[in-house]
Image (tube, rainbow over all chains, first blue to last red; front, side, top):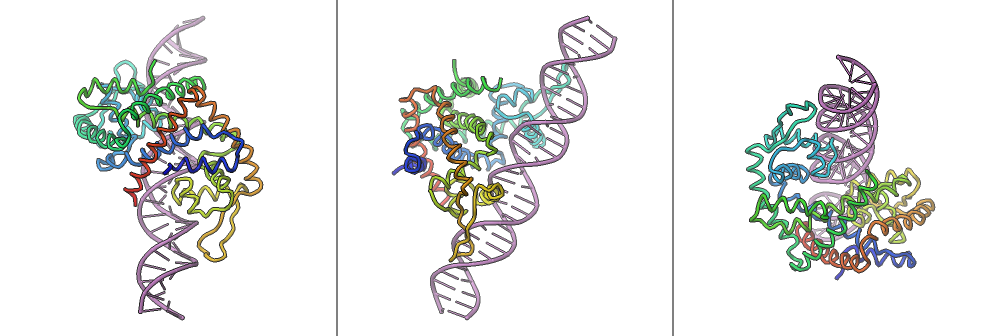
Length: 167
Length: 167
DNA sequence: GCCAGATCCTTCACGCGTGAAGCACCCGCC
DNA sequence: GGCGGGTGCTTCACGCGTGAAGGATCTGGC
């Protein structure tokens, strides 16, 4: 029994026997895992009427425990400014997030969770966590830690590399 | 020096000391790695005027070595039928892909790479592969293989789980 | 033969993210 | 003190993917 990417790799080796598809074994699987996970992890959030990116905004605010400016929020959730503007708009309309103008700099505002937003996160986050635990629970504990460790190394590399490219 | 997800995990442990964020260490990093990689791997393709999904269509046709129906192509690239329809349309207009009606079943058609499409793939794929090799080359060979292995296990699990959910 | 239901692809309306442009505002220099 | 450049957010037009609906075609049972 092999995974979908393993099948693809065998096909490639037949087509281009001289090329090394090693990176595809990593990157292809990474992309595929992420795609499946994103598809699936939206399911429990969907029951609360949230998308993943919206949830990401809410939990970013919860995580820092205080207020964030739109710009900080964009950096915190790895999203573009324009995307954050739209998401904030929706979350504000739903009463989950509130805005407070800055006294000194009138370009910025400060965002925080409302009572309702906080309650939502405190309710949903444990559920979501339990759900995600179930998704990876097929992998033994030691294997999961190994995976998290190597992904951490890779992530550090990629962040460095991207930082070098974009700024 | 820690990666971005490690920072986030520390914040979470302060906010909810009783919850286990183990799955986030895996899933969060996976998503973040995939996001960075997708952003970055489009760069060399962009020089050829291709998006990642378009490239995926082309290489799927190259990989199987023959013709594919739109439906097969959708399954092969893990995309929706509607998305494939649009992509085929563009690739046809650019002369990279050609369509041949089926003699027996007039609902379907068979897609193949044109000469030009084949030449494009044979030129771009090695470049792309070299580029991707560079991206993961910071990780030692053994570590990469370990990563590919564990990701394969996880992928197999997720594919099984998703298959169970969706049919 | 023919009809019901299944299959395959395409079309449609819509939502969401994007990069570029726009706008308001702050700061440092002269 | 005012002006140029920089910063922070929002708006805009657009592209792309999505799920649902549509339309054409095949197939099996009668």
